[in-house]
Structures are given as C-alpha cells and as structure tokens.
Image (tube, rainbow, N blue to C red; front, side, top):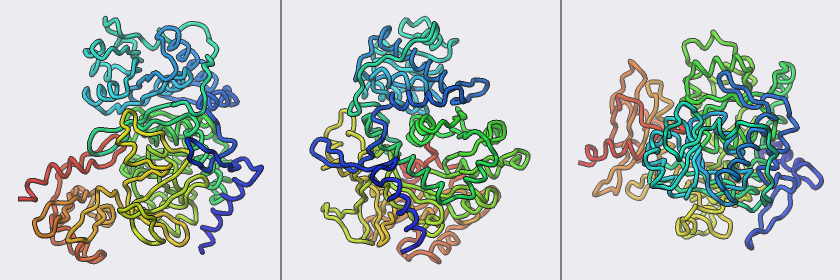
Length: 568
C-alpha cells in the first residue's frame, strides 16, 4: 500500500482517536446509526457565537465595505430580531435569499438561521420563473433580494403572498410589500434572540444545481451541517500535515488568512467551504459579486488572498490573464479547481506559478453537504484520477442495478452514508425515497473503489452512453479531448441509433485561431481509448458552451442544440 495513503489514514486516526479534538462516536437518528464527530457544533447559531472569539478581526470585505466578526454578529442579531418581531417569522418558516454575492447575503443567512427559520438560497442567475419556482416550492414567506432580482418578482409578490427586503435602498418601490435593508438594521444594537434551536431542527434548503429538469430542494439540519463542516476542519488539518513547507511559508508571510469568494453563495462550494468554514476558522472572506479575472487579481494583491477555489475555467482565466505578471500574487497558497477533475495541464500551470500550492481534490454534492471524500498532498500526486479516501464519518459503497454491493474494482453506482446527509427533498417524498434508504444516498454517479480504499468517479449515471451494450463514460472522453492543445472545452452526449441504441457525439469549442477536423479528433481519441469510445459525431461550436452558475457545462442545452441534426 502507498506510504502516502497510509500517511493520510494515520493522520485521520490520530485526529479522531478517543480524547482527540475530532473524536468519533456513534449517533442513532430515526433508527439509523452513524459515525459522527463528538465535538462538532450542534447548530449554526453556536458557530456564530463562537466566531465572536475573532472579535475585531476582518470577516467580510466587499468593495469599500468591511465588517469584523463582531460587527457581522451584531447585524445578524438585528436581522434575527426584526424577522421575529416585525415580520412574524417563526421556527420552521422559510425565508428565501435571492441576490448576488454580497455581505448582506451572508448577514441575512446568519439572521434567518438564528431566528429558527429555514434559509432558502435561490439561484441568483435565474430569471423570474426559476426564482418564483423556488419561492413557491419552498413556501417562503419572505425574500431578501437585490434590485435586479426584485425587478423579476416584484409584480407577483402579492399573488405569492410574499414580502421582500431589498438591499439596494434606491430600489425600494411604492409596493407596500417591500422593505429596505437599511430600515431592517438601523437602530441600536440588539441581543441575539434565543429561540431554542436544536441540532435536529432544519436549517436551510439548498436547491440542487442539476443541469437537467427542475431543481429539488435539499433540506439539511443544523446538526448535519456541523458534521459536514467538521469534516472540512479534518481536511484542513490533514492537508497541513501533508504540506509542511506551505504551512511554514504562510507563517513566515504573516498575512491574516483570507479567501476569495468567487463561487455563488447559493451553492455549497461558496456557502459551506468558504463562508461557514471562515466563521469557524477566523478567515477573512473577500467577496466578488461577479467573476472577473482582472478584478480577482486586484483583490488577491490588495487583500493578500491565500485561498481561491473556482471552476477550471475560472482558474485558467486567472492564470492566463494578460496582466497576470503585473500583480503581486505571492500570497496564494491554495489555488484549486472545483466541480470537475482538474486537467493535467491546469495542475502543471498552477504548480509552475505556485510551487508551494496545496494540492487536492475531493468528492461531495449538495445532498451530503459537500463532504464525502478527500484526496490531498503526495497521495493526490500519486493518484490524480481518484477523489480520495472517505472522511472519517463517511461510508462509501458501490452497488449494481439490483442494489447489491460490488467488489473492489467493479464499476457501479456510488452510495454514501454520512451524518452530513440531508433529510431529504423538500415536499418530495417519492423523490427522497428513490435516493435515500436506510441512511444510504444513491448518488447517481458511477465509479469504483480500489484495493487501497480510494474512490474513483467515472461519470454521472444518467450521463453514460450505452453503445451496443458497451458503457461509455462521457467524462472520460471529455477529459481526454480537453487535453488537446487546440481545444478549450468539450461536451460528450448520446445520440439515438436504431442498431447500436446510442452513438457518441461530442461538441467542441476550439482555441482562437486553431483548426481541427473530425478525423483528426477521432484519431486523437482512438490513440488513447477503445474503438467504441471514439465519437461518431463531432460538431464544432463557434461560441463557448453554455454553463450554469457553477460554470459547469449544461449538457442538456448542448444536446438539445444538436440532437435533431445528428439523429437525422
């Protein structure tokens, strides 16, 4: 067995031993027993209170606005009190958030969850229909919004029986259902209300960022979030042991820890891994409301940002910006691509520019509050295709179509059991029953476990093309094509075929000035993959492929664009 893998397992064992900070225990919920962290925070309000230990240290930075941890807590206290006193919000009521990344987004979230209400972050990229779907599906009584999102929904507030709080004071309208943020938080300091929140109480509903169909609202309890964030802390401490030189460099530089928030807050990659983690660690959060590589460079230099996670495209934009060398980026120690496997070329560019960069990847989704497995340090360098080892509280198995557990190396559907798992999908009992059974979540991802316990993800189950009985994992084909120097991005998908069932098609967006023929691309794939995995159809997109808010290619839109032409 690899010494690097053994090293991570040894650290996990030490961190979770009896009496240690992350000691494990067994917790039974609704008859299902989970491994859990004994000392994890039980509620979000507990995390907020404990963040007061960081007092006057900077917490939120946005343009010319700055809030310390103490100031943020004070404002969140006002929000919570006003929700209860002025808006009659009670425990269990839903309160939505529909705005771009702003300090007020975070302060509203803290206030909502402190008042015992269920926060409902909505996709700020959505239009009127998507926003109103989230409001009505969750049954929200109130929505925090900015001017742009308010314009989408203001005409329908009365029909939906919803009130709104808008953060842009100038956007306040004559609509008697709209209140301004400033009205909400003006006045003297107010003590944070205590409404008796229990760890098993629901905390928030995060809508899945699926690229097909209507999103489903995943409901998480306060306790499950505390468990997830504690896995994040375990990852951080383990990562430090694998990168001692990087830790020493950070200590020598003496900068206060700072993270760039460029991913959307309505997704776990922004909410969990940045903001909620920052509240536990005392990290400064530097907010970008809209992705812009030059602005990111300016913020990294000005705020001495050490950590920046983004989709691979965002990392490329950052590294390849024509003015990159004009900015001081020496503070960067953790530049990481999320949402998909990092291309080898991207990893090389990151290490060329930042040789002390922390290395790693992981596996998680909304339904397990982002933390299922982790790969890091030397273990990652030796096993780049893997998403790593399960966290100490995570159990992972792979099953066949009949639900039977498969052996090492056999490919099937990945299932996860974890105390960080969601309660289910809001108002969708049938959908919940399909994916959650006896504590195990059926991820819809296809993969396998190897003899060392490492997890490998091959593809989304529904994104697999079956040609003549042979399984083609689109992610595998895309990863290879994306390594071609002429290619910016690709999307593989299935096309119906009378004889084979399906044939493989791929849409490709090329680098400016580059040329590539169908035959050249097919020869390139054939040199590395089995013949049946070579795309039958190749189309070249003049424009970048459509993406969602997490910068993931929206495969259904790509398929819809070309399917009639290719299937004819």
